[in-house]
Image 1 (cartoon, rainbow, N blue to C red):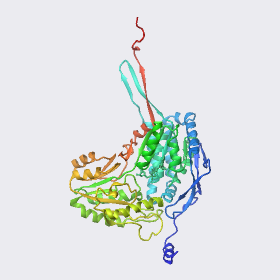
Image 2 (cartoon, rainbow, N blue to C red):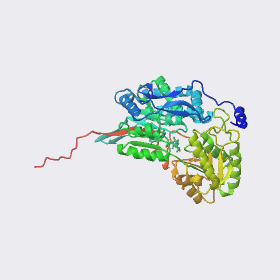
Image 3 (cartoon, helix red, strand yellow):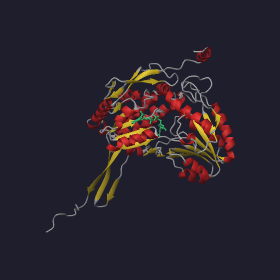
Length: 510
Ligand code: NAD
């Protein structure tokens, strides 16, 4: 080590390590923490030191078989699917209460494991509680359709849980995204097997204790850690798992779709994005700049709905780029545990390499106006300076491909038609953000965008009742509100004759 490196390291405080960090992370099957059947483990890194801090159980098909059997048993014989909605709702509210009461600890562990800034990890922990509360309320308010044919028939919908739901989640906001699936799957009376992302298994293991304390019956929640190609794959191919809810990359979604096809499983796919923010010249530029800075640099840019392409009308383009770049340079990058940090450390060195390679590519595809690699003063850890490329042509790979880091491409446009063609000219269609004060344009433009969700003069502020999901390569199916309830339940139609039985008579001929 050179003297200079020693000095730099000495200047920086030791990275924060949470107290009582577990050295091993196990599966949780049928109410018990267990190792893999073959004893295999994998190392888990923290993104500030990139040192292995824990060994996690590496699940394979034998472990998935055990977890599915426990979940199946709890579904077939246990009380959970048969409880009144109000009784399940009470358990879910208790889960939300516990999550809220431990939000600081959850945020500390999540931030340590994922590199998310502590303030944002805290927001995600609270949102996880809110997801449980929301679905707890929804199932008691749930009503189902009844149809009357006067004097002849009453036909009604008998809604029922489906069975063992397989939940496969990514690493970007692990705990919150797990809650987005666990909440509705459990509220509707299913039992589950969760396979969290291998980069960030720490917070998922906390669910077990929370659920036990809240009174969730044994076997209803099961957790199998492991690699996607092993544990995830076994879950997707398991014949006793009729439902898979997946959030992750579009290419993984394609593979899962193919692997689930022989079993004709119910699939919900929340996939990647390359969402546009379109700024018209008549927009409130101050608000648009603040929102589009936050939109791509929050959660370290590791955000499926990040506004990672900004399309700006020519009349305000130069001013926008200049002000945007200046503000991006002031975004505070640093230790995820520091409350002043706005962008923390990217989740894993592999992902860091991917993001940095896109930045290098971007230097030949666009004009670098902020960032461009590792920030000064942070020689180690997966830190990337908020990076802004201007004048990016739509053919550029940094315009077309999901980078999933703090990197944004800015492109000018002259007409509404050109802006729409640019906005829609990628394979993804998750979110879009439109900035204009012209009412007609705002609605017409928004409605023409190929995106599952549009925000008008707003950041990404979710209303949990609205549909969540993407079009094109960004997903299949929508969750959110009653749509989640629909995904996790079967709707059986029951028909009752009220009047005289009216059978067509076969076989009574002479
Ligand atoms: P990923 O696809 O690599 O992994 C997601 C999960 O799938 C992990 O648990 C992984 O182990 C598992 N997996 C991988 N291969 C598998 C296989 N063959 N069979 C079964 N499971 C498998 O995604 P990631 O890198 O963890 O997450 C980032 C991606 O997630 C980005 O593309 C992002 O846009 C997307 N994302 C989408 C949303 C949304 O709601 N649309 C939300 C968050 C993240």
